[in-house]
Amino acid sequence: MSAPSCVRVAPQPAPSDAYDVVIERGALARIGEMALQVVPAARYAIISDAHVAAILGDAVLAALGAHAPTELFSFSPGEASKTRATWAELSDAMLARGVGRDACVVALGGGVTGDLAGFVAATYMRGVPWIQVPSTLLAMIDASIGGKTGVDVPAGKNLVGAFAQPRLVVVDPDLLRTLPPHELRNGLAEAVKHGAIADAEYHDWIDANAAGVARGAAEFMPSLVQRSIQIKADVVSRDPHERGERASLNFGHTIAHAIERLTDFGVPHGVAVAMGMVAEARIGEAAGVTESGTATRLARSLGRLGLPDCPPGTLDPAQLLAATTSDKKARAARVRWALIARVGEAARGPAGEWTFEVPHDIVLQALQS
Figure: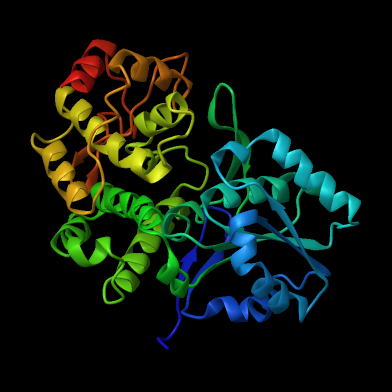
């Protein structure tokens, strides 16, 4: 078994919010003792979707239950469950079971679970500590890090939520062995994004090893997981509340969220991000912000990983543009785009800003190309 590694997330300027992302094969079996060291709670409340709960629930119940009373609260899988209604159902279930302020919430699952369980933790009895145990590649390298929690509402995705840093993130790469190919691809899109905004060498490494990376080969995944986590941790540590640099992590996401909304989440998040990155690179090129050829370069890399490079043909570009106005970065219904200067470097405006307003006609022309 490989030695564990640890990435420190240190949100500034709040050192009390710092936490570790522990990357360790077989860590799931040690989640009880890890939790006890960081959050010695009187009770642990595991929140997981029904699918993950059926696979991993008993093991985590046993590991945590060896140290304190532990219960599992589940919900229906899928983005459709990331709602205020599910948040209320989970909160009410915990109240009915007598879970108190001395408890700790444990989010076990993918990105939906992390967002939802984190929002429960942030609001339950005005806030209780929580731990992330991501089970998908996307959650391991991206969604579990940074303290963003929340739910979707009819107006858009992730528009109701809170920043609530976890006390610990436990990443067990062994869980990737049984990850379905489509779930692996979802995570790989975020890995490409990390390279696109911050590390050209990392992007090129993914591209050069695309065949092995795409199948989740054991010789590549530890390096990919470690580097992506480090990039995400560095950015969110410098800007924990997305007042500046953290917006760069949204590259590809404005179009992605519009695609998800217009397809009623029929397009998985990572796949939508892949589509969104190429579209937003084209927008950046058309606006004179992004180096020419960047969109083609990203499309080639994503294609080698089995990811698409354009939105579904059933979506009209004008529809996509209209749907972007509900994005969190929009101001007065004007979209702010997180763009890249070139592969490996997030773009900044003349005043140091991390997002750009691009005229609608330029955006529409780029989406139609």
